[in-house]
Image 1 (cartoon, each protein chain N blue to C red):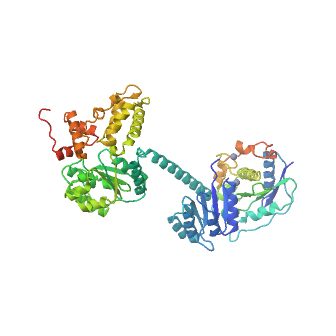
Image 2: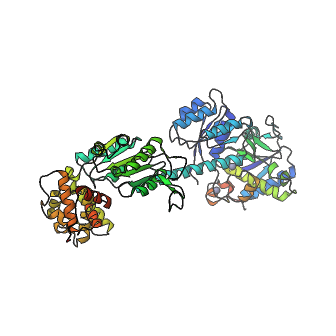
Image 3: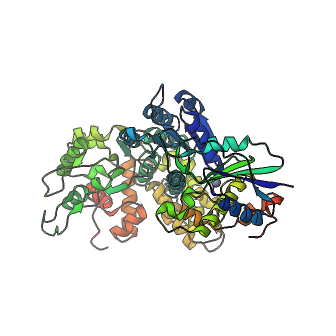
Length: 450
Length: 179
Ligand SMILES: [Zn+2]
Ligand SMILES: [Zn+2]
């Protein structure tokens, strides 16, 4: 037996209520009737009925108004309007206002039977979609932000607050602190979560390619542009665009970006007219953008456009109590993904992890654990499995500015890899463009005899 | 022991009523006789050339009977205000039902008359309404007599038998017959 429906029949004529009530009960459904709009509203509450049949013309309140009030009380209610020939126009208006369908009195018994069956099928389809969406929610859930420190709890609070809004977010933090993770968390908790999350690394591409990546181009816009190409802003329509390393943008692209943010529209390279697109921006930088503004390298107007809701991520060394839980989280994850038996973290290894200053932050920790899982044969992760940089004691200068510490570390890594920039970037958990920028900034030179 | 009393209404030919009674009696395995009483009220729906099925049902329900089920069979087209027509009417658990032969007749659809087909459809419709009197709701089984049919084609499709689970819920007196 098919699932019985819960049906509400609203009509001021007793004969209609009685005969429809009897008819639906004969079909195995449960039926309530109401002789007025007021009675219908009194009975209706979220989830109480599957289908309501409303007479479009009743004394007191017309069916259209009753429909909008019932839908306000229970948005999931399926409404079928009952109408006389004379008021079919009104019924069509009702459908535009959210009625599922209408049926003209007197009904052909077969028509009503088919209509109700179809409405029931549509409802179960909708319920199925709902379930699917929920499972998608779980599947698309971003990796958790792990940690119990006050610093990270504060970040999680801010993420939750800003998710519900449309505000542009500027995430700042050192490389590897999890800026993209935060962007994903914001997107996943926002009303745009069923829309796309489009990620652009602004520091990784030369100016010309980045422009066409961001804004798209028409066929023939430049040599080699054979086909039309949709830009990331267009692809982010209905969703979120994550602009990573926004501090690396060239002055020209900064101007173009500012215009897109102001107009909520993009003009593809080589196109005449802009295309409207509905995106939300989360930007990120590992630079001090305010410093860059002062230095004249970053437009102040763009800075203020992006910095609507600033969100600063703590460096891992500022939340050292999270190192062990994070390490154990990665340990569990990698042993599972490599189909390995559980591996325990040796105390000595944990101590080494805690003592290290993690210039590459969480990403460096993650890489260290991944590497250690690969080299570990037994069920204990020993300190010897950790990268040399972690275990070689306080090799890093105990004093000195953050930048000095970072520079020393980067130099050490470049030396260790024989100036293989790609490999060093991987170890440092930054992308190559970032590493090149640092090399340039600090004027690091490859030793001639290397 | 339960029996069926069949009222010929709305100009139904007496031989047709007797044929229906005999066939139904064989199906349920209980006596089924044609009543001698009056022809019932002729109540037309306002503005429609159709008999008010509920008025007819009310009259049948008011007939004095002892331990019998009252079935009305009419040659007139039946309807109720909310529907363009009905094949029959019965209250779940009631003791009377009414069935119209009008739309079971191939002639209604411009097809050649077929007495055997008409009687066969009439008996099935009566059995369907008897099912409602036995408190059976409509059934989803594609070939069950208790499946709802909004057209004569669909009524023909559902066949002549109750499905097993509906048959199980029929009262004993309706289960002694042969198909
Ligand atoms: Zn029925
Ligand atoms: Zn059945």
